[in-house]
Image (spheres, rainbow, N blue to C red):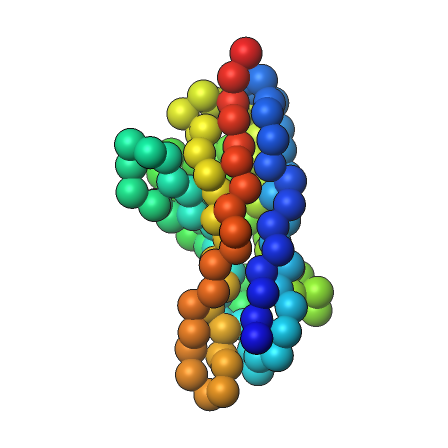
Length: 119
């Protein structure tokens, strides 16, 4: 059984920063990709950023230059450093891991953490 546990969400003023983290625990063979998605009541879940086990990264255009994704394969943890936050970044953020589990790639999701950017 694989579990993802997120932390780091909260309320921040516009222009502020937050750091999200997500750790995977349980039995699996390897990590393929780690990432962060976000969702609001008005929009479908969208990709924010992702990083492969080899370190290649991909960002949504809306967060380029402001957010940085990083991963620690030894700790099975992915981080999202969010700077210069805007009200439109307000959403529930979900971490995602694609893992090799029993020789098959399998998707796992965190429970979600609320990020609110407001005065």
